[in-house]
Image 1 (cartoon, rainbow, N blue to C red):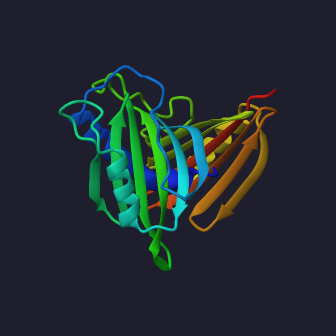
Image 2 (cartoon, rainbow, N blue to C red; image 1 turned 135 degrees about the vertical axis):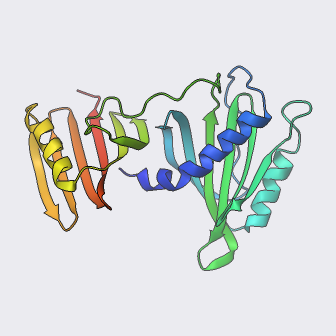
Image 3 (cartoon, rainbow, N blue to C red; image 1 turned 180 degrees about the vertical axis):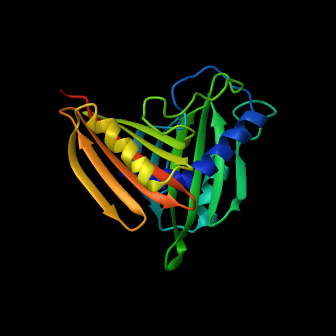
Length: 244
């Protein structure tokens, strides 16, 4: 999936930001998303406008700035200097996520996160991500089980689940791990989709890896299986056409 790699790198820092917000701030009723400007004169593009990662809804923009990290961070310190609630911080900063520097703010029930690092080959410039997510109304509520609608072998563990809803299509990407062999997992998915009448588009074997692609009129599933120590790591990407 187009944005998967970005989210897999981003998720741990996003979880930290949610934890910090949960510990420090209250959760007001949802309002219209607050103003969240990019750094001055930065070029900005959407990475994803409507994505759900492990139950956390998210929209992300990427930016490239001619300014340094220090100037970008200082811009948000000034932008967010007024606390959204009396007695609460205007923003929080994270300096132990190198090479990223993170500054975020909770406002009107949303978490606003700036993640910035030095631009490659030019320390005077920077780039990063602007993320906005609604905070959970009930932070104590148990996280829903991941990957309930995706076939997997017994004793499999879903590491990540990402859902996106773009015009005309819905997509889900799962990362699954288990201690079964690559051969057993491949046979499981082959039997699962063959037995349900899906059309096999690809069945490719390589060293310590296997790829399966199945499709129906409305849906296409790509399954990448990788040998991982004594077990297997599986990436299942399902794209469903919502037009027809």
